[in-house]
Length: 348
Length: 117
Image 1 (cartoon, rainbow over the protein chains, first blue to last red):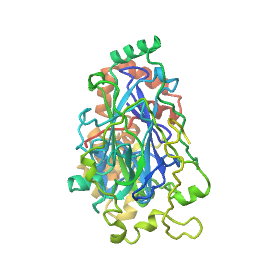
Image 2 (cartoon, one colour):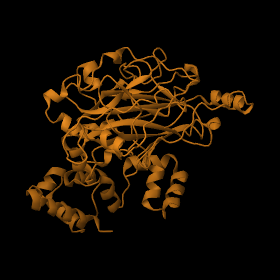
Image 3 (cartoon, rainbow over the protein chains, first blue to last red):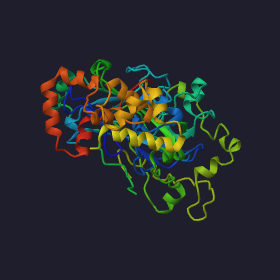
């Protein structure tokens, strides 16, 4: 079952095991500059609001209700990352492993393959929790980096879906979660209780979170340093007969206000302002786990900037970033990388 | 709770003020009953019509069929089937939830739906 609680999807498998489940939320964040540089993990600026899609009158788009799931607002200037939290955070030893597939426009964000409702290993098309606390983008860049998930209007050719399929029919975000087989989990618990593999490789200090489509999809943005870890179990360890899935429809800010009467979260903070306030950026590095290779199919996709979005749409950059004082559009400055690779397994 | 007849009459008259396509005659036509019968239903002179007609009224007046059925003292066939499969469990569940606030009930029953995609 999937419940919505505090703008978070709570996916549970009580029929499998009381601990089997995961919580997923979508964090608003800064767009990192889309340039040749690789950037550190940007901060979380709070959860995007999520609502049951069937609660709203979608007017001429009411067919979208047939997909079920939830609806979420995004400004064109927004970027997001997915935050995965085990259901019971009472120590790594007891967390129940869950495999999660993530798609945008029904293209897998990990493998670049068309969406299918199973787990595949060659290439791996899912992430595992615990182990992968966040996902900031497509497995589309060089190894050890991802291309940031950034909002893009459907129908202009910027989304990954449009670049790989040539059509703009789906949009949104797709999630499907599979629990580990209960037999495997029990064996795992037994081995851990004997101290065989107790050493935690997952230190889940929360990444900073500031409390303060219909026609939308996601496109690849700037490059971010992030590994997507290889599944440390075998494919047979996952319970493919039990899965839950959710379609996240993306609405632009105007559509969201029309539908819900709620103001969407304010346009994102800029990297410029964030840097001026001396706020931290993040790195996560687990030397005990191997990362998977970049998805060959996603290697072909280009960012809106590379596709000339700014030239085609004069407002593109203005929506992207605004100077905190003047309101004029600005080009964000790069962050200093003096500390890069200095520390492993560290949050900063 | 308002009576079924007066409730649908209020809904119909409100819509009729906005678009003039909701006279007793026109609505009766749309749901397939005689205008005189609908008029009597609206004045609560006769009992509410069948489940099928109530669902048709809800559709025409853009109301929730479950609410209209509840006002008419009826339970939709699909809900009845669900209860009849496990009458003891559902009767117990509904009685236990009787005094719970809405948010607590929603938390128990509300799941994110999955559809065709």
